[in-house]
Structure formats: structure tokens, C-alpha cells
Image 1: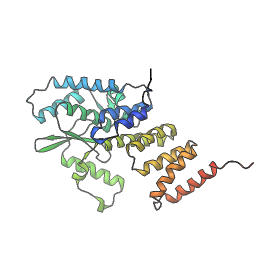
Image 2: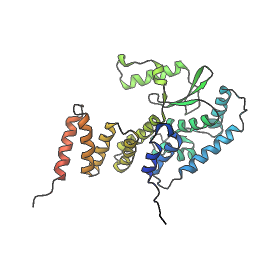
Image 3: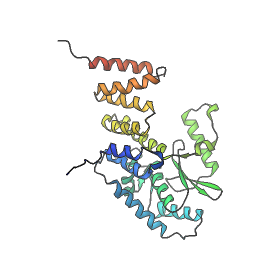
Image 4: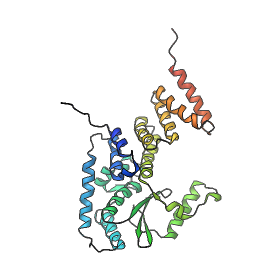
Length: 286
């Protein structure tokens, strides 16, 4: 009898994100934690969210308006279940893991948003994530307009409040005045692939800050699979591979980046790194 080995966590993730039309955000997001827990049962996580959605649907009348459904969602998610932002330990990697957020009821804006989006869909709301600068948001279609929610609190944010948040970000980021795009630009819906990339980049920065190269490499592998045309992610994987002593693999990534971005500001430093790796690869003289 033939026996087939189960897919590795990375192979499983690759299958989930291969096709935009088939990409299921919650499942792919839940699978990110398999780098830390390879045996994590992702289907059990999905079943747990489905059970929450059933509880919520039971209290919503079939003829409820979108505004009524949204009120029930926020009362259930933030009020009854107690989901909120993890302000006490904001940069913990666990805040990016869906199964941990389900258990702790604390997470990052984007992880909370992934759960909100799934529940919203299951109760018949048209909702999407919003990659707002510095703080991921959720927007829901309500009649001819939209409500924009802060996933930390469930608060509906007015246009003036959003302008205030954007002004703070612009001030802190040092954007020049000619890059001040209108508010609507920052309220565009984010595709599932974009949401996953932002989740992974959060983890990437956490591991890079602590110089945890093995964990950063695991994240970089997923980013390269998720964004195969994004050569800066291959560059960053190459730099991590170099830190881990994998010279041959590092060279392949760095040279692929330089072949397309040879005039980039970081190209001279990368060429020096490539030369160092090539020297490291040479066999010792006999």
C-alpha cells in the first residue's frame, strides 16, 4: 500500500495561497502559527470560529438590516466575548497567531480583523480589511455608505477621527507635503494576499529586532511564496540565509535581486556582501 507523507507546513501554506480566487483568508492566517507549532490543527481552529458564528447567527433575525447585524457583531465580539487589543504585550509574536488570539481574546488589529471579517461574512455582511497606516481597520457596507471599525474596540470611526489618525501618522513618518493623499486612498479594501503579507511582515519585524534568524527565515520563506514577484523579499531572505551560514542559498537570492535592481540604493552594499559570500564558498588551498 502506498503511503503519502502529509504536506509540510510550508507546502500546506503554498497550496492555500496558490490562487487568489481560492484563497481563504482565515485558514491561511491560522496556518502561520504552524512555524511555531507544526502539529497545530488548523481545521479545529476554523471549526471554533464557525461555532462562534453559529452562536451569533442564532440571535440575528433573518430580516435584520446590515446596521443591525453590525451592532450585533460588535456587541458579541467585543462586548460578550471580550476581544480587544493586547496593549500590555503588543509586540509578542503570539498576537499574530489566530489560535492564540481565540484563546486569549487579545491580539493585534490585523489578527482581530481577520476574525471579524470571517464572522461578518458568516452573518451576511459585506466587509473588508483596510490597510490603514499604523493600524489595520475593518469597513462594512451599510446601505449606500460604509462604517469603518477599530478592531481593538469595535468603535465606529468618523471621517474626522480618521483624518486625525492619518495626520498623526503623517507627522510621525515625516511624509513630505506633496505625498499627502486624500483619506479615501487609505480606506481602500485590502485583498487577502495583502492582509497575509502585512501579518507576516509584522512577524518579520519582531524577529529581525531580536535577531532571531531561524524564526525570521521561516517567515521569509512564507513571504517569498506569498509574493513571488517581490524581489526585496528574496533579498531579505538572502540576508537571513547569510546570517545562518547558508552561503549558496543566500547568493542565489541576493544575485536574483541585484539582477533586477542593480541600481537600487542598497545595491553597492549587497555587492560587497555577495563578494564576501563568494570568498566563503571557495575551497581552502591544499
